Amino acid sequence: MVWLLRLVPLLLAGCGAAIPVVHRDLFDVAYSLATGRDCSVVRLDRNQTYCRPIEPPPVPPPYCTRSLGTVDCWSDPSRLADHPPDVADGPTHLTPAQEADRTARWPPI
Image (cartoon, rainbow, N blue to C red; front, top):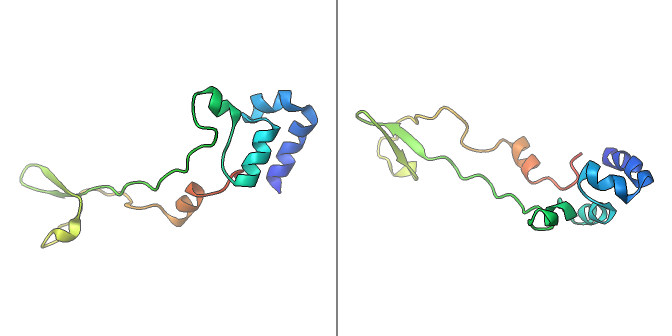
């Protein structure tokens, strides 16, 4: 409901103020709300698709191990016999909050 309150001044100002502020006109807002996708006529003006494409999940990083003077990377670490420790120290997948943000409907609340 918070997003609806943000749109009230734009509805009162008319279409002329909506495009510079939120990068969509009133039809775009209604269509985006109905479909849950981020759609805008501004994207068409930039030679893009009308609606922002659904973002695919990130590709998992390669599994890299230390070797003699170099680093070897593997796409399937289960094939390694002794399963040595990974060189990377970061996360290998999205957290539930990140996944929820990636797949959220428009408008963001």
